Image (tube, rainbow, N blue to C red):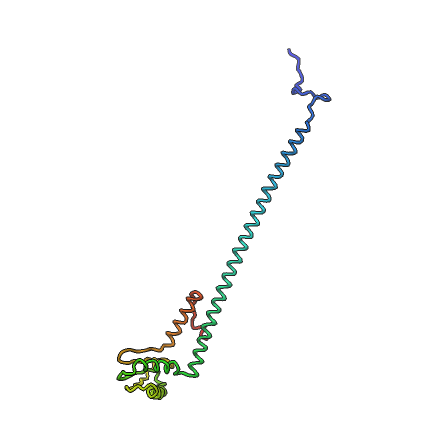
Length: 200
């Protein structure tokens, strides 16, 4: 029977038996550790930088969206103010000189239709007498020799009217004019609904 023998893994544990790590090995280990630390630091810095850039982009997007929303609100308010002012001025002008637009239109039409045999002016039924008086003065002023006819109609708004002669005609329609103003404002400031609540 063979005798048992201690297994020593082929290593000599006696003093000076192990090879001490050289300065070169230590320097290489340090360099490797330093390089690994630098790489890890670079990755962490890059990650933090990317996170910061992402945060800045999100903040910028939010600021731009907020500014666009604010500009849209200002434009809507400006459009509202423009319409309210236009309606207010039109209302004040109509109250002060209800036949001013009609008088100017008739003056223009008499210039074009000076030789027409007749001129028919359709107005609100409550304005017939005032318009007849105005037309008599304009006919004398312009030298219109034809017949002037004023017809009152309940469906024509005060201040509005229709002027007709043999070769043409002219319409003053404040509702249509307001619609055109709203369309012009909408084309400048974007499409908004300016309903009856804004007329108050």
